[in-house]
Length: 225
Image (cartoon, rainbow, N blue to C red; front, side, top):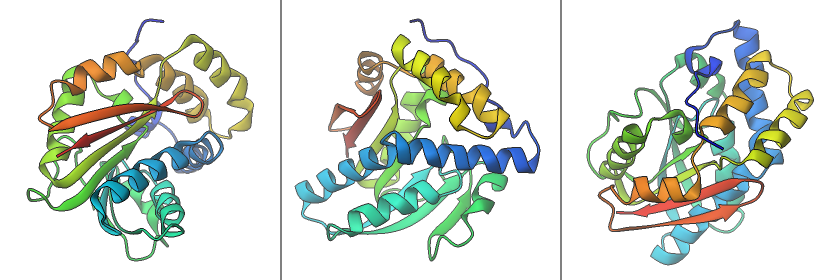
């Protein structure tokens, strides 16, 4: 299955405020039902275990509503890991949904030019983001994320596969927004395979990286500073 770069409606907020809010809630359901939150939590636990750190600062890039990042923080808190969140998205209309996140800092900015000093966070993380990027942009983002990170970068994303594409279409009735009905299949079409992501991350200025498979066509990469 060839990768096909496809514009996604949520990227440009091509919908009404109600449709956009519904699509952000659909993304939450995708992360809850299909293992996205659990994959991110697993990688944070791995970083905490290997470094011995139980208090971590985390920048979530392309955070959307921020609800997924908050759930992940709650998951790892149950295992003794305290995560202090900063949420970043380039659309103010997305992070406006972050009201009630608690004391998380919210920033509107471009993921490819992060407005933070070097080594500002223990971890920089993203979920369902890198498939939106071209190959050179994946490398650019990973290097920029490493710049603002002290310990590791987490990439949590889809894996492109024909069966995943079929499953995505079969699951569309579960979702409420026409934006999701367009964007979910488009996301699978333009996501990367593990070998493609490995080739891209080999060009990044990390000391080492690892890529693992997670539930239902998810992959998780950890890039160590």
